[in-house]
Image: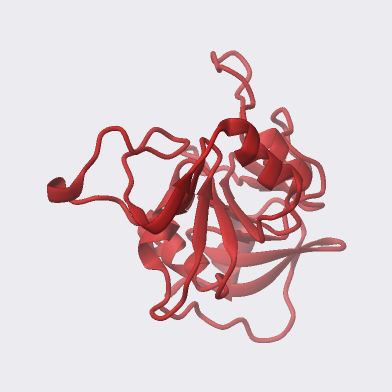
Length: 217
Protein backbone atom coordinates (compact mmCIF):
# COMPACT_ATOMS: atom_id res chain seq x y z
CA UNK A 1 0.00 0.00 0.00
CA UNK A 2 1.08 3.56 -0.65
CA UNK A 3 2.00 6.05 2.04
CA UNK A 4 0.47 9.53 2.01
CA UNK A 5 3.69 10.82 0.47
CA UNK A 6 3.48 8.26 -2.34
CA UNK A 7 -0.15 9.21 -3.00
CA UNK A 8 1.02 12.81 -3.44
CA UNK A 9 3.88 11.68 -5.68
CA UNK A 10 1.47 9.77 -7.93
CA UNK A 11 -0.90 12.75 -8.18
CA UNK A 12 2.05 14.97 -9.12
CA UNK A 13 2.34 12.86 -12.28
CA UNK A 14 -1.05 14.26 -13.34
CA UNK A 15 0.28 17.84 -13.44
CA UNK A 16 0.91 19.58 -16.75
CA UNK A 17 3.25 22.41 -17.59
CA UNK A 18 1.72 25.86 -17.14
CA UNK A 19 -1.27 24.69 -15.11
CA UNK A 20 -2.77 26.63 -12.21
CA UNK A 21 -3.49 24.13 -9.43
CA UNK A 22 -5.38 24.40 -6.14
CA UNK A 23 -4.39 22.03 -3.33
CA UNK A 24 -6.84 21.17 -0.56
CA UNK A 25 -6.02 20.46 3.08
CA UNK A 26 -4.33 17.18 4.05
CA UNK A 27 -2.60 14.85 1.59
CA UNK A 28 -3.10 17.28 -1.35
CA UNK A 29 -0.75 19.86 0.19
CA UNK A 30 2.11 17.35 -0.19
CA UNK A 31 1.81 17.45 -3.99
CA UNK A 32 3.71 20.77 -4.10
CA UNK A 33 6.83 18.92 -2.95
CA UNK A 34 6.90 16.60 -5.98
CA UNK A 35 6.58 18.69 -9.15
CA UNK A 36 8.21 16.78 -12.04
CA UNK A 37 11.64 18.16 -12.95
CA UNK A 38 11.54 20.88 -15.59
CA UNK A 39 7.82 21.53 -15.16
CA UNK A 40 6.39 24.92 -14.18
CA UNK A 41 3.16 24.80 -12.17
CA UNK A 42 1.51 27.66 -10.29
CA UNK A 43 -0.07 26.52 -7.03
CA UNK A 44 -2.96 28.67 -5.85
CA UNK A 45 -4.19 28.84 -2.26
CA UNK A 46 -7.67 30.12 -1.52
CA UNK A 47 -6.39 32.37 1.26
CA UNK A 48 -4.76 34.53 -1.40
CA UNK A 49 -1.45 33.20 -2.74
CA UNK A 50 -0.41 32.33 -6.27
CA UNK A 51 3.01 30.73 -6.59
CA UNK A 52 3.28 28.48 -3.54
CA UNK A 53 6.40 26.38 -3.25
CA UNK A 54 7.24 23.31 -1.21
CA UNK A 55 7.15 23.16 2.58
CA UNK A 56 9.96 25.17 4.22
CA UNK A 57 13.02 23.92 6.02
CA UNK A 58 13.84 25.28 9.47
CA UNK A 59 16.25 27.74 7.86
CA UNK A 60 13.67 29.45 5.61
CA UNK A 61 10.47 29.13 7.61
CA UNK A 62 8.24 32.21 7.79
CA UNK A 63 5.41 31.90 10.31
CA UNK A 64 3.38 34.56 8.46
CA UNK A 65 3.41 32.64 5.17
CA UNK A 66 0.73 29.93 5.29
CA UNK A 67 -1.64 28.03 3.03
CA UNK A 68 -5.40 27.60 3.49
CA UNK A 69 -4.73 24.79 5.97
CA UNK A 70 -2.57 27.10 8.12
CA UNK A 71 0.59 25.16 7.26
CA UNK A 72 3.75 27.17 6.74
CA UNK A 73 4.85 27.26 3.11
CA UNK A 74 7.41 28.85 0.82
CA UNK A 75 6.74 31.19 -2.09
CA UNK A 76 8.42 30.91 -5.48
CA UNK A 77 10.06 33.92 -7.18
CA UNK A 78 7.29 36.07 -8.67
CA UNK A 79 4.62 34.80 -6.29
CA UNK A 80 1.74 37.18 -5.66
CA UNK A 81 -0.55 37.84 -2.71
CA UNK A 82 -4.12 39.10 -2.91
CA UNK A 83 -7.36 39.27 -0.98
CA UNK A 84 -9.80 36.42 -0.56
CA UNK A 85 -12.32 37.94 -2.97
CA UNK A 86 -9.77 37.89 -5.79
CA UNK A 87 -8.76 34.35 -4.90
CA UNK A 88 -12.32 33.07 -5.12
CA UNK A 89 -12.89 35.02 -8.33
CA UNK A 90 -10.09 32.92 -9.82
CA UNK A 91 -11.77 29.74 -8.60
CA UNK A 92 -15.34 30.67 -9.58
CA UNK A 93 -14.13 31.99 -12.94
CA UNK A 94 -12.62 28.55 -13.70
CA UNK A 95 -9.08 29.87 -14.05
CA UNK A 96 -7.68 26.86 -12.14
CA UNK A 97 -6.95 23.81 -14.31
CA UNK A 98 -6.76 21.24 -11.52
CA UNK A 99 -8.08 20.95 -7.98
CA UNK A 100 -6.76 18.26 -5.63
CA UNK A 101 -8.94 17.54 -2.59
CA UNK A 102 -9.03 15.13 0.29
CA UNK A 103 -12.23 13.22 1.01
CA UNK A 104 -13.94 11.05 3.57
CA UNK A 105 -16.15 9.41 0.94
CA UNK A 106 -16.59 9.38 -2.84
CA UNK A 107 -19.54 7.76 -4.62
CA UNK A 108 -19.48 5.95 -7.95
CA UNK A 109 -21.16 8.86 -9.74
CA UNK A 110 -18.49 11.31 -8.54
CA UNK A 111 -20.15 12.79 -5.44
CA UNK A 112 -17.73 13.89 -2.72
CA UNK A 113 -18.17 14.16 1.05
CA UNK A 114 -15.24 15.88 2.71
CA UNK A 115 -16.41 18.48 5.17
CA UNK A 116 -18.54 17.11 7.96
CA UNK A 117 -19.08 14.06 10.16
CA UNK A 118 -22.47 14.29 11.90
CA UNK A 119 -22.12 15.01 15.61
CA UNK A 120 -18.68 16.58 15.29
CA UNK A 121 -18.20 20.33 15.55
CA UNK A 122 -17.04 22.01 12.34
CA UNK A 123 -16.77 25.67 11.38
CA UNK A 124 -18.41 25.15 8.00
CA UNK A 125 -17.82 23.85 4.50
CA UNK A 126 -15.43 26.68 3.68
CA UNK A 127 -13.88 27.11 0.25
CA UNK A 128 -14.52 23.49 -0.72
CA UNK A 129 -18.04 24.40 -1.88
CA UNK A 130 -16.63 26.86 -4.43
CA UNK A 131 -13.96 24.45 -5.59
CA UNK A 132 -16.34 21.55 -6.24
CA UNK A 133 -18.90 23.82 -7.91
CA UNK A 134 -16.42 25.53 -10.24
CA UNK A 135 -13.55 23.13 -10.92
CA UNK A 136 -13.66 21.15 -14.16
CA UNK A 137 -10.94 18.70 -13.10
CA UNK A 138 -10.97 17.32 -9.55
CA UNK A 139 -8.64 14.60 -8.31
CA UNK A 140 -9.23 13.19 -4.85
CA UNK A 141 -6.38 12.02 -2.62
CA UNK A 142 -7.58 9.67 0.11
CA UNK A 143 -7.19 6.38 1.92
CA UNK A 144 -9.21 3.57 0.37
CA UNK A 145 -10.75 2.45 3.67
CA UNK A 146 -11.41 4.00 7.07
CA UNK A 147 -9.79 2.98 10.35
CA UNK A 148 -12.35 0.18 10.73
CA UNK A 149 -11.44 -1.23 7.34
CA UNK A 150 -14.69 -0.08 5.75
CA UNK A 151 -14.64 1.17 2.18
CA UNK A 152 -14.66 4.91 1.49
CA UNK A 153 -15.19 4.25 -2.24
CA UNK A 154 -18.95 3.81 -2.21
CA UNK A 155 -22.06 3.22 -4.26
CA UNK A 156 -23.60 6.22 -2.47
CA UNK A 157 -22.09 8.57 0.10
CA UNK A 158 -23.46 8.33 3.64
CA UNK A 159 -21.98 11.62 4.89
CA UNK A 160 -23.23 15.13 4.00
CA UNK A 161 -22.16 15.97 0.45
CA UNK A 162 -19.79 18.73 -0.54
CA UNK A 163 -20.39 18.36 -4.27
CA UNK A 164 -22.38 16.23 -6.71
CA UNK A 165 -20.94 14.48 -9.77
CA UNK A 166 -17.71 16.46 -9.72
CA UNK A 167 -14.85 14.02 -9.04
CA UNK A 168 -12.94 12.82 -12.11
CA UNK A 169 -10.18 10.67 -10.63
CA UNK A 170 -9.17 9.19 -7.25
CA UNK A 171 -5.72 8.19 -6.02
CA UNK A 172 -5.79 6.04 -2.88
CA UNK A 173 -3.23 3.97 -1.01
CA UNK A 174 -4.40 0.99 -3.10
CA UNK A 175 -5.27 2.25 -6.56
CA UNK A 176 -5.84 4.91 -9.19
CA UNK A 177 -9.51 5.05 -10.15
CA UNK A 178 -11.37 7.02 -12.81
CA UNK A 179 -15.02 7.92 -12.24
CA UNK A 180 -16.92 6.77 -15.33
CA UNK A 181 -20.51 5.96 -16.15
CA UNK A 182 -21.44 2.94 -14.08
CA UNK A 183 -18.73 3.07 -11.45
CA UNK A 184 -15.00 3.28 -10.78
CA UNK A 185 -12.67 2.21 -13.58
CA UNK A 186 -9.49 0.69 -12.17
CA UNK A 187 -6.51 2.29 -13.95
CA UNK A 188 -3.54 1.31 -11.76
CA UNK A 189 -2.83 -0.64 -8.62
CA UNK A 190 -0.31 0.06 -5.89
CA UNK A 191 2.86 -2.09 -5.93
CA UNK A 192 2.25 -5.56 -4.47
CA UNK A 193 -1.50 -4.92 -4.25
CA UNK A 194 -3.67 -7.30 -6.26
CA UNK A 195 -6.86 -6.55 -8.14
CA UNK A 196 -8.62 -8.86 -5.68
CA UNK A 197 -7.37 -6.75 -2.76
CA UNK A 198 -8.83 -3.65 -4.37
CA UNK A 199 -12.14 -5.38 -5.11
CA UNK A 200 -12.50 -6.41 -1.46
CA UNK A 201 -11.82 -2.84 -0.29
CA UNK A 202 -14.26 -1.20 -2.73
CA UNK A 203 -17.99 -1.06 -2.04
CA UNK A 204 -18.85 0.78 -5.26
CA UNK A 205 -18.92 -0.90 -8.65
CA UNK A 206 -15.32 -1.54 -9.73
CA UNK A 207 -14.81 -1.75 -13.49
CA UNK A 208 -11.84 -3.88 -14.53
CA UNK A 209 -10.78 -3.81 -18.17
CA UNK A 210 -7.84 -5.99 -19.09
CA UNK A 211 -4.55 -6.27 -17.23
CA UNK A 212 -4.14 -3.56 -14.58
CA UNK A 213 -0.59 -2.18 -14.35
CA UNK A 214 1.24 -1.27 -11.15
CA UNK A 215 1.84 2.40 -10.41
CA UNK A 216 5.29 3.65 -11.39
CA UNK A 217 7.28 6.31 -9.54
